[in-house]
Length: 104
Image (cartoon, rainbow, N blue to C red; front, side, top):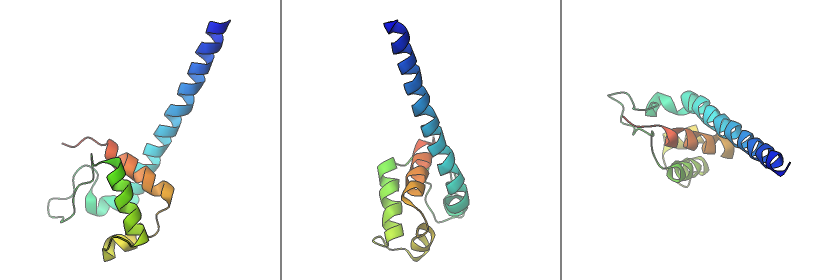
């Protein structure tokens, strides 16, 4: 009986973690495609773009930079305008998505 309860608890625990991570990554990809990819690309920016690739960057760095652009404590007219509409969840999701990408 105890083994069954333990197995059930572990299964439920795993089921609760994976969908959340998948949802965050999916939401981050959707927002990145809509907001970020035009300049930063997904894995690499376009050849003539002056913007850095965000793929594989550190999650905390991306999250911090986006929040600073949104709050206008990091100055860039373009990025302040673009990040101005992002919620905390959007920022976390975008950072998780780009941080999880493999660079070429």
